Amino acid sequence: MRVQPLASQPGVGAGVQAAPAHEDLAPPPEIDRARILRRVAVLVLIALVAFAVIDLVPGLASLRSRFVHANGWWLAAGAALKVLSGVAYVIAFRAIFCRRMRWGVSMQIGFSELGANAVLPVGGAGGLALGAWALRRGGMDTQRIARRSVAFFFLTSVPNVLGVIILGVGLAAGLFAGGVSVALALVPAVIAAGAVVLTIAGGRWAAAAERRLDAASKPRASAVLRALADGVEEALVMLREADPLLIIGLIGYLVFDVLVIWASFHALGYVPALAILWIGYLIGELGGLIPVPGGVGGIELGLVGAFVLYGVPVGAATAAVLGYRALALIVPAVTGLGAFALLRKTLAGEARAIAGCGPGEMVEVIGRGEVSVS
Image (cartoon, rainbow, N blue to C red):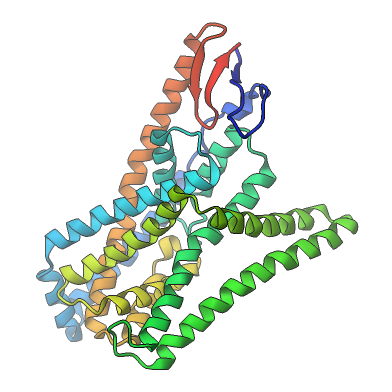
């Protein structure tokens, strides 16, 4: 028995697409349990060492006091805000990659990705296998997945970069409370603006280099450069189109995550000026580029260092960052585990529906929408 998509969506092209082959309907990639267990063990070991240091080192009495007297309601609010950040991630992912997928399935895939990213290294790349699986299942070719992935990373970075520019200029001009030097305000803004220019220029350079490599018969390197060039171009086109769902997803993904650390500061007894909170977060998160499980160590050092640089007491910054990072790892891991279990259940239901349908009947297939059984 085979399933065949209905006529294409308006604006995509008319006619009936080819029926998916058996491998197109394969289950999602299996999680390497041994690898996941190793990553979790590393995270648990790091957490135990951190708690032991806080509990045993005499000079950390103020830090222990902050955790003992932490406000549980604010921590619960932080957990809820982390879930909302995940919802915004799903909205952005769906707007960039696959609009015809059902919202429920989009949530299952998106939260499964975030769960994988919580325990796998390299800022956001750990869960991409699930997204790529869903897109290939929907008939998207590898090159398009590659360039949309480039566009996704570019677009999700745009609010961060714009935030640094706006906050830096605002702090330097005295529009935001913070009391930092002009250099501390403007240097990050200039670097962020330069990063935008370099990214756009890099896309154009990649396009020119791809043409030269293609002519020299180097297809693999040519494909990488083509994906980079086309991905940056597609991202710029999407920004010019200003799709409301995409904008909501991109902004919400960042804003809700910043509010998680804001809630953590509240829970642990010290709240810096909002502009300092934002710019410290945006700069400190660059530590997540260090390839360690869940960014553990790199992000913490980056965030604490950035906050201290902008005048937050080291004890308050350390406590708030540790509270934030606990939420940032535990909430996606728990929700991701539940989302992946639901995804497997959805796939089992899909298989039963296909097996029970007669010729001409319709069934919902992940990545393809409603299809006709033939």
